[in-house]
Length: 182
Image (cartoon, rainbow, N blue to C red; front, side, top):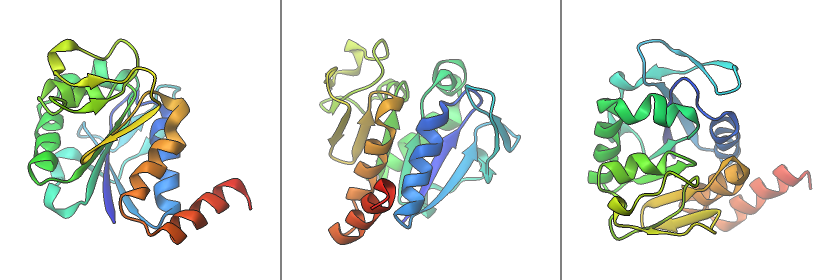
């Protein structure tokens, strides 16, 4: 499977890096795309990483799913980026999996994708205007082709939920064993 991960300055480190690592362990190919014109992206803790491409160069039809990490990037950059909303809607219109964590589910809410869906997110990023069912006590929620996680604490579980959508159980068990050192 081929996934696309959106990165912007101030992304939450573990939500991106742990998620990507688990997906790679599952055999997925994950492309990172910077929302700016620069490939270098600085995490919330100051770690500089290099994305593979920019979001402007992405063709959504080439990917099986979308991953959006949270962190300060959501409020400070992603909420105001029209390309982010556009790519989210392209994945949704194609019926593809969209996985968002922490503050990032609010991006889906802003474009109307939470209506009638169960979701979780970092406290303070839920909104009645999203018209979804906010499950504040849940760490990870899957509803249809949408996966949500509340915070960085749930990064591994979040990534495993993505893998569950397409990995056969034996392969998923092997991923879990390798993560646990068994």
